[in-house]
Amino acid sequence: MHPAPLARLCHVLQAHVDQGVLPGAVALVHHQGRTVLHQAVGAQRPGAGAPAMAHDTLFRIYSMTKPIASLVALMLMEEGRLLLAHPVSHYLPAFTGQQVYDPATGQRAPAPRAATVHDLLRHTAGLSYAWEAGPVPDLYRAARIGSRRHTNAGLAAALGPLPLVHAPGSRWEYSRATDVLGAVLEVVEGAPLGTILQRRVFGPLGMHDTGFSVPPRNLHRLAEPFARDPQTGTEVALIDVAAPPAFESAGGGLVSTAADYARFLQLLLGRGTLEGTNGPVRLASRATVDFMTADHLGGIPTAGDVLPPGYGFGLGVAVRTATGLATRPGSAGHYSWSGLGGTFFLVDPAQDLFAILLTQAPGQLRYLSELYPALVYAAL
Image 1 (cartoon, rainbow, N blue to C red):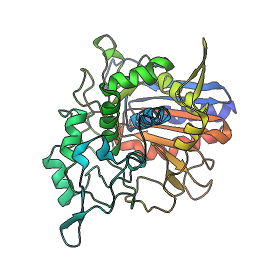
Image 2 (image 1 turned 135 degrees about the vertical axis):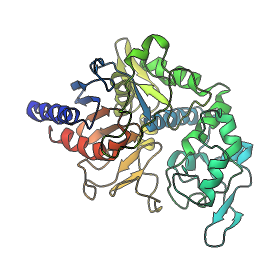
Image 3 (image 1 turned 90 degrees about the horizontal axis):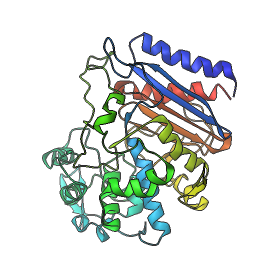
Image 4 (image 1 turned 90 degrees about the vertical axis):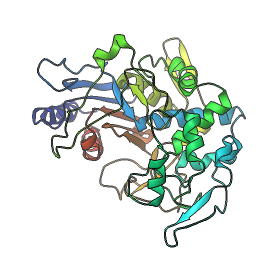
């Protein structure tokens, strides 16, 4: 990669820090088998005397948790212990006999088919995040869906009886589906989700700084956002990760570092195998990773504007279906996702490339998801 555009990438991020848009950030770019950029800018938290941002700063990565949990589900599929065609109710009885809400009539009707594990992985299970107003979101809020006081089993028990916003398989809508998947994983493995992820991914890959909470000895390394969004003035509140939570959210609960998450992306770019200091570490087959990172929507319509034009969705990641159409550069077949707190990654197999941007600036997420790929691809 060209050094001048990589230097410009760092200058642009530093300018955003200087302008008070970002408290700080860590950027990492890996190309053709080596890390060509791992840069920290700004401070770990706002305020005078705050420590400088460091390579090993910890970030709440929110929905960048989803691809990790999704890979574990596919590892269980490889072992014959989890079938994607099985209905969710096969593992979670609370999802038996689901009904679909019809906004035109205000009535509920039996779902034409059961939501499957495949639907959970690709967000076509008829669930929602309940960000908007309406009868079904009101029911989500009344049931405290997403409360960190729930366990995964408690979340499934509360969410299963609620009406669906779409018939399963009929529409893509970003949702609590991966949180439900976390409950499925716990049933199959008979262990808490954090234990499962540690045993199956974090331990084998050497992701020593990744988990659902930050040990007291490492809290000084945790990045924090501005108290208020610098552009809108809206109060910013991120999840508390100072103690182990009851809710180990497969959809958005992990804390990690750029170096740790790079290990996971190296595994994906390596199609299931990571070259380690003591030899290769293999978690999944090449065919399984190819399956995970292919488009699973086809002609299924999407709700909302979370997926940009030119993108479908795989199993835990957005998948670029065409080099054109989108407003950001990228090769067809590249895949990516982001996290609500202000984190983003992309993997481009055609360019033998992955890139990570970590910051804690929720209000800037959409902007950064457009800016960062432009800066990275400029260096090719």
